[in-house]
Image 1: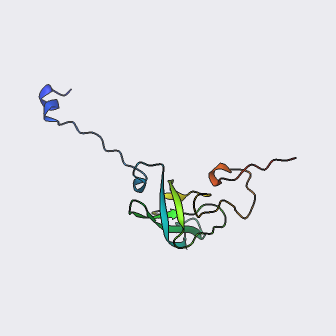
Image 2: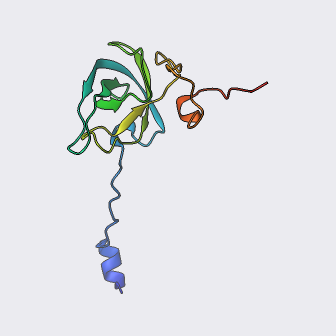
Image 3: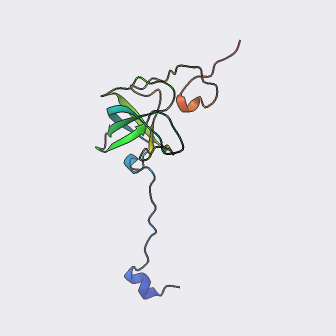
Length: 127
């Protein structure tokens, strides 16, 4: 139990909460411009060519973001919208690009039935 003197001196410290996506600065999304679009290899047990981009945000920060889905049209100077969400097998990649916003087209190479809303694809109605 703290005494009144200890409380007056201000000896109690707030616990620091670590933010998982600091570049967003407590916003849900941020706009940015692609500086470089390239592929990287994932960590040890996995093997692939993951598509990533280096993006300069409106805040001035440069971050590495993951390009989700199959196929993309991104190149240098493309304007994109960023959300949080890390890629577990790519070190240093803590952000995703949102499909269907600005220069990143929503259309993929195949019709998606599951997880459509994350890739902004409309539901196909059967007649």
